[in-house]
Length: 288
Ligand SMILES: [Zn+2]
Image (cartoon, rainbow, N blue to C red):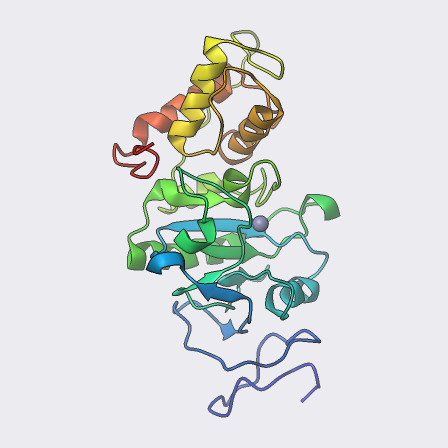
């Protein structure tokens, strides 16, 4: 057995299908929460969910690292303070690194629908993809099929609402681009994962709001984005932060053109989504 393959524990008769990256201490393994998991690589980077908060959100990421080994090292090595519950490889294999009951450290500083401890209310899934800084390859179909199967199981077990399946960029628009505009949210929604409407057509002309604009129309745009769940100040000023949230919205819901400008297609797509959002979507935000 090569040195890079660690034993999965005394009860395990199989060697790992994925080599443990160097520098990762083999930890006590656990029984995976999902039947589609092919291997467990325990990460020490987790804590307890705040006040016993049960997860009712899924946050999807790409790893943004040049290769699988560096991504797994980052997620599973003590001291990096980063982890995720699941990792989906390009060939469709699924690893679990943190038990769903625990609080994995994937979202960082983030906000959605009035909550800012996103790690406590969510399950984090890292999808192996080099990301924007390393050429941003397409997601293989086999990998997307695995993401869908994994999410469907979590959604059914935990009763997660479609509008609570989000990308990292949705909950941290100022810092994050993942999983990015190539991520096929439309395909996921067609398989019952996430909320999606066919984006309104991009057409020339019409009202366009962009950086520097001010007034009631900007305020209405910001309110609509906040109503959907985005963490955005309703100031009436189309500032840099507003452009970042519009960019995040486009990456997820209108990926054909990601430019941070609220054109008629972006506005129409946003309002179509609000039209199908459940009335009880924002119990936290509604209080304030
Ligand atoms: Zn991420």
